[in-house]
Length: 153
Image 1 (cartoon, rainbow, N blue to C red):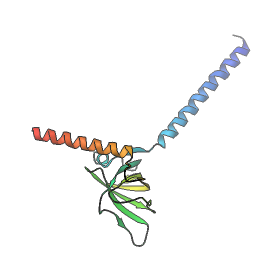
Image 2 (cartoon, rainbow, N blue to C red):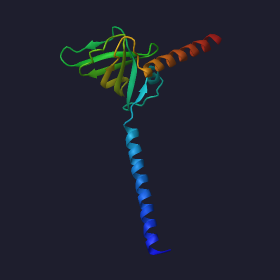
Image 3 (cartoon, rainbow, N blue to C red):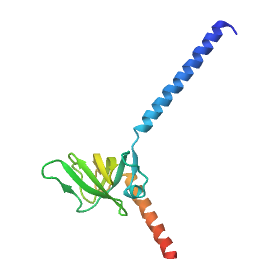
Image 4 (tube, rainbow, N blue to C red):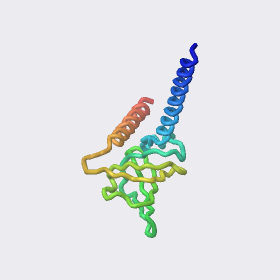
């Protein structure tokens, strides 16, 4: 093989290897920053590891909001109408936050309590995030299937 061709071939192979390594690092970084969506039923079924960052979606349970008098600490319960998950948040809640309305919170699970770093509320009375609506529908379907199984026994 001619020395010039050999140099070009080595350069092309090195470039391809470099691109492959850079792509692998980029994909790994992007995958770590994804926030997966879970419902309270998913959490109670153990699908989420403690300390892992994810998004929790559902409806704020009526009469569950408790605010601290001295700090911005707020606690409330998110439900998919099947299971409930307690949430703790430190900060100012969105203006549209209301009990009985849909929310999506970002954070992690710590000792069975969802520690939220961000809370998003629905934007009008007819809107429910598609993820929340899907999670509620799946939870209802599971409950219906479980009830049908129990009645057969």
